[in-house]
Image 1 (cartoon, rainbow, N blue to C red):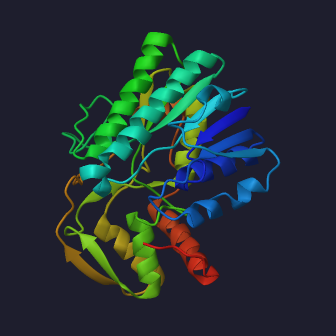
Image 2: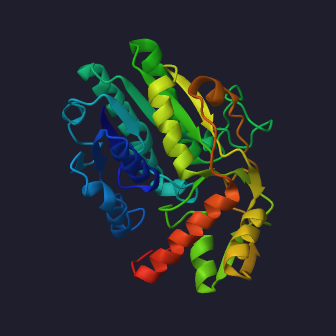
Length: 320
């Protein structure tokens, strides 16, 4: 199978590239190295993939590049590219979210329509589309009500993916990721910050009182869900992908503390646009995709702590 992975140098994209290559597929990865965080980090994410002769990397901006050429010979698209982050989606930077989350997705869909040979496109959506959901665990039938501009753009892109499936019979599927963590997680994300500061003995800032809870999902489970969706997902449909365990930020900190010792914590005001709870009803993914999470929270956090420990020992830059 010939695969295209957009956002290939990112946290999830690079992990997906590695697994696809390990499974024997040919992978074309594309990334434009947005300056949201260090290029050095993203380059290091691709070290393993670039050693594989079945991997082709293209540095390109999906807003301007020739999409038809990019899709030439591709069987499956794993569309992971986008502008991430809730906090920075407010204000003037919002245009970046429109460009990289909505416009890029529309260009890929138009490219699929023109080329006509892609068998499936899996789109990386987000639990952020739900906002403060009315019921937990939250099913795909819940009315999306984003509480951040980031969530608004992910929902808009998701609607485009469904629309093109309905109107043009394009083979697309969307996965709503619930708080992904694990090795290679972006430096601005909570687990990375917690692990790094804990290992360095620094004070960890906590937004809110730490009781906010999430359905934390290990990156290997996200990767597996993508592959399953490319094989079994119903065209135009959306699926929740969660880790199966709801835990508070304080629970996470307690687990990290069990691996590294006493933490220094500093609680402050909660963030604007942050949902209080997320919890995934994954019944549909189990039924249609045969997806079940395999990595529990404690095992996953241990893996991320060890990855961060090795990263700090290596001396490579990992700015927060």
